Image 1 (cartoon, rainbow, N blue to C red):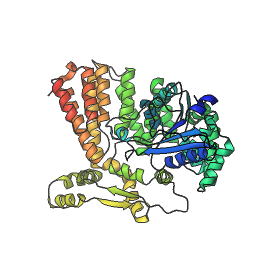
Image 2 (image 1 turned 135 degrees about the horizontal axis):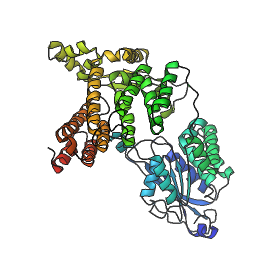
Image 3 (image 1 turned 90 degrees about the vertical axis):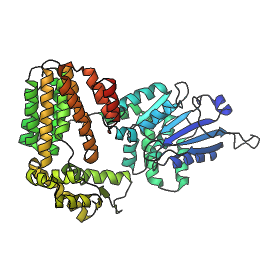
Image 4 (image 1 turned 30 degrees about the horizontal axis):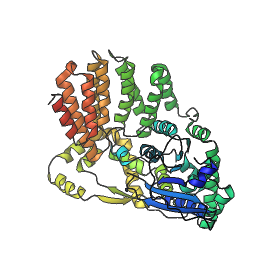
Length: 504
């Protein structure tokens, strides 16, 4: 236990750091080693590199042992790796890494102080899931809090951005603020100064981390609190929000409002009004009053109506918020030039579906121009959106959203939506639970290009089963089939599930 001076004299202080590339985990480990060595401690650090592309962080391990300033103290033999149940402090640069440290047994309620940022950098497994593969951040925080003796957590990425530094300096400040190390603030700050690189912003980040560590719960709650938004000035938007208040039950107000916001951003207020009209019509049908069904329809109709076409992709890639996010991610300064290259590989289907319906249908036919264009699209291309020419190319494509309703893709998606909604209404008359599962099948259709094509193929398999089985289909069976489709976009798991349920 670190709180006992006698135990400190007998045992090393054991610190594990879990950090991703570019977050300064190595610098943080070096700071802790220097802090110990300059203040009478033996110190040793080792590291085990993590796998690239956010499948795991590098683990740095530091041990500090007192007595280095006493010539009579024999040099200790220090460990090279953290062991489960034998770590005093765990520093995690991201919330999932805090969860992984708990899972590995590094964090124990009798001993360990866990210090973690609450921001998320989603893992490959979370990003590649066909459905919503994100791990619940609140659940991670609850489990980490139960597992640790002391749990200090707040958004350290935001604190690093505010101070113009990196997250390692904020973690160093939080380590001081935790009070688990026997060193003064001056000794911590002198360590940063001795480093000699980025001293001023690192000291600012250190101070912010130390301050927030003193009251982590309040800091996190303040960060999570929702801000009160002002009423919109646009009359059309105000009218849509008034419709939500008067035409929909309170249990769906929040979801419907978010759906309207999404569709206004995607297209325009008239498109959001179509969304409300569709919902009203669905809720008025027999069985449409079921609350669980209503929540599913509100969410999944908004998602489908905002399908990702080439127009949407171009729009998202040229937004100011994206340029700002990329600059922040690479820590580019205001006076630095940054090139952003987009690797575009549209299939001929995406090109045809972006055109007006008649022209798109003509181009889809296998004539000479279709074949020539298909060969051209196989190579793909790179567009530098940070250049004027590259930006203008995507800007023109994004501006075509004014003509989206005339495109072939819009016609196709609306036919699919109406067919899907008809299946939901038909099932709701006798089995609202089954209708809810049908509504949630929309989760299978996502993304664009090949991902969308595979998802649509799996969705069609599910809808064919719904059509064949009719009212005989058990809701839980459809749920199993849907989860199998989400587990494997190529349809292998879905095929196995169909065979097991005898629905081939």
